[in-house]
Image (cartoon, rainbow, N blue to C red; front, side, top):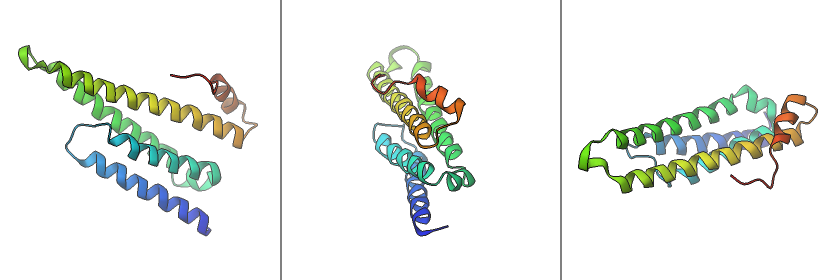
Length: 143
């Protein structure tokens, strides 16, 4: 492994530690988590685009997906707790705020994966399945 690969792998590992530290808190997921997630997404994408073999050997894409699944689960749990409250305890303002942060997370994740697939297709073209998926997403389409 050369110096550049080691540097990028360290960046991914450092970003992963930040994400896991943010998730280990007992706080509910908040908008403060998104910048940390974005840093992790970018680090993983950069490694995959420049050193695909290393990213594959270290299961970077699987780890990134696992983080997204974990964050999604935290949001769903939080929203489920709000919905489970009875009577006057419902907290509609907190529920709306949590739903907005969750929606922002989902949209940011969709934008990331859409761009990631397009970048992979342009970098490693000639994979028909990848190109077919990447071409479904137009760059000017907003979600």
